[in-house]
Each structure stands twice: as C-alpha cells, then as structure tokens.
Length: 134
Image 1 (spheres, rainbow, N blue to C red):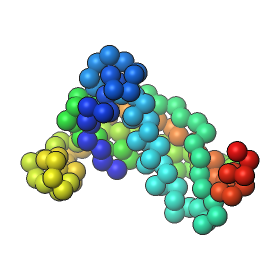
Image 2: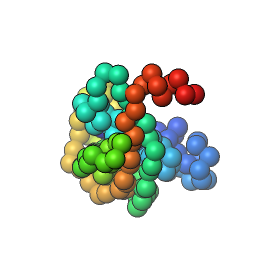
Image 3: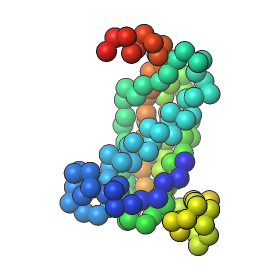
C-alpha cells in the first residue's frame, strides 16, 4: 500500500510531537491497514481480525510530500491469530498523475530507504460474537 504524507499525517496534527514530519501513530495505522488487507484472504466470511499487538521501530523521519510504501513481508499463523512482519519505505515521487489529480504519482518508484519496521499481531475472531461482547 502507498500513502502520501500530508499535513494531516504529521506529528503536529496528531499531537504526538511538535515537528512537521510523519507521525508515528499515523505510520502504525498504515501498517495495521496493510495487515488487515493481508489477512482478508485468510478469513472466512463470518470472521474478522482485530489488532492486539504492535511492536514498531520508527527509524527515519519523512517530510510532508513524501510517498511511503507499506508492505507485509511475512505472515505466520499463531495460536488464535496471525503475526505479520511489516516494513515501510519511502518511494521516489514521480511526475505523473496516476493518483487522479493531486500530483503524487502513487505508482512511482523506485523504493527507497526503510523508515520503519514492525511486528503486528491480529487475533482472528467471529465477527458477531466479538460485537455481542461489547
């Protein structure tokens, strides 16, 4: 999955810092989104997955305007869920218009330096039973 870093994604906007760079909480959310997509093909229609653990190392700052690619590199079944290895990298922003109009070519490449790595664990649950417990 690829995400452009906007002002709404910064540490200032999310209250996690006072500099205009990609906020760690936004990066965690993007990594979780990638694991949701990766888990989808492994679930039956009555099941869903819920995040239960994230261990992430944010290694490098990304400025507004950067393009970040988040990729699940490994999936392992465990006890009652799935464990994912995830990596985020900056991508060279192209001059094309593959995104539909804001100028960031989301099909651009090549993939650049690693900005974060994570281990994300998602429990697989019965959707109806999970919601009934709330």
